[in-house]
Image (cartoon, rainbow, N blue to C red; front, side):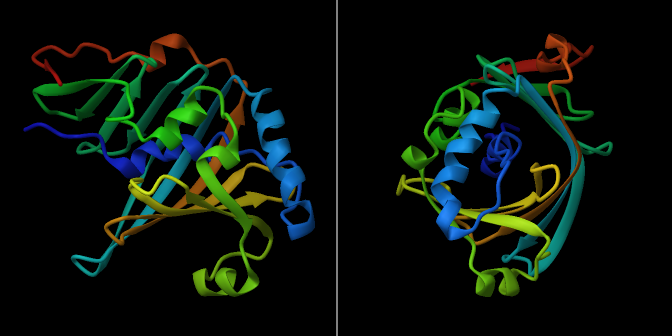
Length: 225
């Protein structure tokens, strides 16, 4: 069976490169956005553990998953879901491997806007101008109450400017002491909402290049797309 890369996974790329060293009061929003890029430029790699809770409207229930992420400039990443039936997304910046653990094939794609949304490609390529891809604003107290989120985080709302985007909105919560992403809400065009929790976020830890290459497994065939 052939799998097309999951759009929700692609936006994990954005989450780990948005590192805010400042609060998100309306009066300081522009300064905060400028500092995102300035801080990102100092990070050569980012890694984290995460838990993902997905509210699936079609079946009316919540699904929970967990995993690890690794990102490295320029454009390299690995997102690995835990468990025997977990899935790995691995890219060296040119190829994207999608592998279901235990399967007899791995799907291989070229990295482009067809496989990874342009919003994510912008960040993978060096963050770029945040306002070029998104309409950015602080999250209101009313919206925070609706989401039932912690008030000890700083929250930022990103709305894609691209009308064809698979992402409706991205809401990010930043730890006020470490200034790293702690929580995120992602709503896509299907109406499903993913709630992410991050821990053990590390930057500039010197992640090895081999992490971003798919390791050949005996009996597993590459299916190129």
